[in-house]
Image 1 (cartoon, one colour):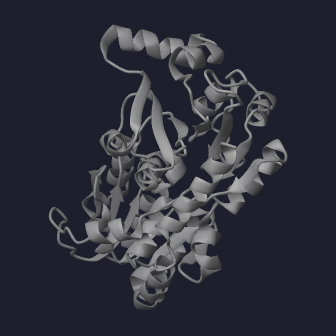
Image 2 (tube, one colour):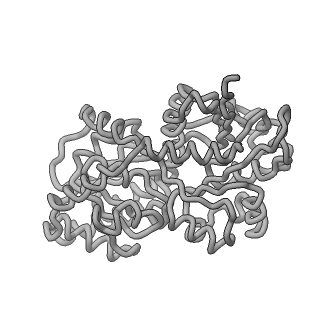
Length: 384
């Protein structure tokens, strides 16, 4: 008899423009369709990666639509209905593997599922992905879980917990204790796709001076306010540079006001979320990761692939990505260290040419197929 495909469900908050969502869209593209029958379910039907996911997987959602009915369903899911009801109402299916691909609500919903699997003998195995340092950024507390103990019990209901870096795993264990199914599974980043898309230069404004670039959601975690303050410091010291922030988020107005107040609005470019950010990145003089916390920064990996010099503050995943400093410059995670290092690059005290060579060396070590196979082995192991 032919071998049946493993039925896999990935549950995610949404398919908006975040790093985990981007990784998921790339992952489902790479999974072997002869081995896996993949469904992606979003809690909220929104996001820039929906179309890409639909090309390679079945797509479902829990809360969609608009108007008063959408608001009612949203309130029921996020505030009123027990997680076990939501699971039975909108998630349950004949799956071999169910994976909460992001922390928070997807983790709580799958943890609330009853044991067993409808229609087949055997138990549906569950995997929880952890993309962030939950010790440095315990954002789920008081938002999704009422207590640390409740969140710990939720993770205890998963057969495996996949951490995107060693430092994320270590932070998780300090916060929740060891989990017998903890593994490190690095994010798949498609090197060939990044390089191919970087060749499209339309829409990128001409570079007039030293260009610093960063990318991510416009949220406090990403530390873009630090970069704007550092840009103002450069201006005070007679250094000419411009800063490009790629992404969208709730802090856009705050960041624009900060730049205006510091007198650097003319040196700040914020083009929003771009489906193809790679031409912007490839043409920059320096990529900076200013995040107050991370898990494994996808855009740092992409910058290495493009051979762009990388400056990063130390946070989870950075040491692994930058080869302990062989592929990019790491500094302490504070405003002063970041500002000093930026001035070193703009002034020429740090050689962009040398760091470009080092970044390219790191980029050549990124292996998309290997990372996807690593995930496939995890899914196959979880399905047994």
